[in-house]
Picture 1 (tube, rainbow, N blue to C red):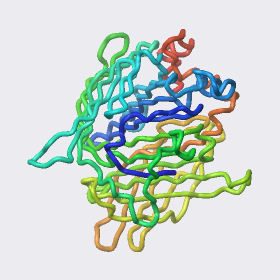
Picture 2: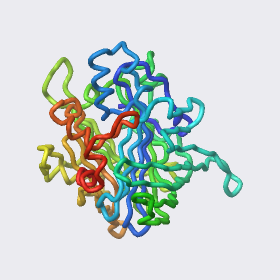
Picture 3: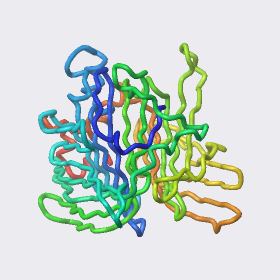
Picture 4: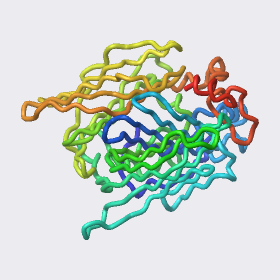
Length: 388
């Protein structure tokens, strides 16, 4: 894993290797904790069976390129229960990815970064997201979301001993080593959300709320299963800082079945400028098996001297054969502070399972190829919501 925190490198990167991918991830939770939203823009959707088949069958072909498989996923939850879900792969001519600026358009959905001055100082910017997604089931989501905050300190991960600075070459470029690049662009943001949920053209919910948000950017030069075996990720905003963590298990070198664990966990200041703590992983506990025999841990313990944080994945917001998303609850304790508790968003993925044909019929119920006739399940509002 290559790490950095640099808003200047949030634009689209060239990707020439088959199976490569890039995504821009946004999430937020309303002030009252009732609503959660996750929006991901992709160039090279890792979950696209068309992309996987092309990259495996004809790696030199045009359809094995990430640019041929742009997509967007949108999830809106009320108290951890999905009220809107979409994963749509669009034709390339309906999408645009800017290599000079952080600006992406997928269908009628887009985001753009704008640098702004506030209180006489620079280093403050905002991401404006415009959402307009209509599904064959009649479900529709329209609105605007804004994520604004201080630019991160680009030296956030330099010299702390646990997280080396990113190499000069990106891993998805011809000059870079294969692997995965994670750009922690905006660990903490002020989120404003104005969206309407419609069904068959009629507004069923008008949502207007503020909250705290998060944005990162991921880039990979090869299918995820080649880079890691499984991956835990999560973030929680506390009053005095934002917890961001990941835990990756890698297969050993030279085909060894022995797993190698890599993890990072940080508490970052609310202004995104300082690394307050680098925490150690103290344990993964309480593994729970879902209906597809995926068995991730539901409790994580992180520690740094007298600071302890326990993360519990309390609400299962999404559960499938290779992926789980949780609304988590984290508790922070330190002798000099009153115990703090807050909710966040967490994920677990087992990427090798994405390539198992056994699960593809389930994927096709949820993944919409916009240039093709939709799956019959996607046409039924009741049946499609059952897949959520």
